[in-house]
Length: 141
Ligand SMILES: [Zn+2]
Image (tube, rainbow, N blue to C red; front, side, top):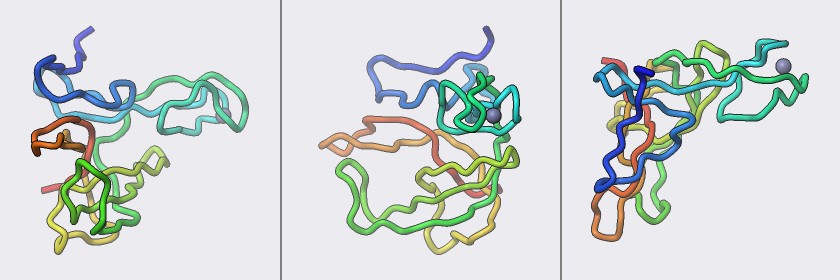
C-alpha cells in the first residue's frame, strides 16, 4: 500500500487515522468518506452501514477542498486549545458537511470561502507542546 499515515512515536498522537490520511510521499492530505453502495450517499465520520438503507459502505477519498458553510470563534475553549480559536463546518462536493478547527486568521474568515484539508495541531499538552495532530481547514491560496 502506498498510502501510509505518518506516525512518530515520540511526537504527538495522530488522531482520526480512519478518517484522515497524510500520504508518506508528501502528497497533500485528504479525508476519507464512506459511500453507500446502494443509495450513493456519503457519510462522515465512519459508519458501519448506511443509516438510510442499511447497506454496506465503501471507503472513498473525499475532495481536498470545500466551501465554508458556517463558523464560530470560540473565546472560552476546551483545555488544550489556545483561545480564541475558530471552528467551522465545510461542505464538500460529495455532499457531506464536516466540522473542524479553522487554521485561518479570524479577520479573513468568510462564509462560502474555499478551504482545503490540512494537517494541524488540534490539542496541546499542559506545557503548550503539540499533543494531538489531526485535520483542520485552511483558506485555499
Ligand atoms: Zn444508503
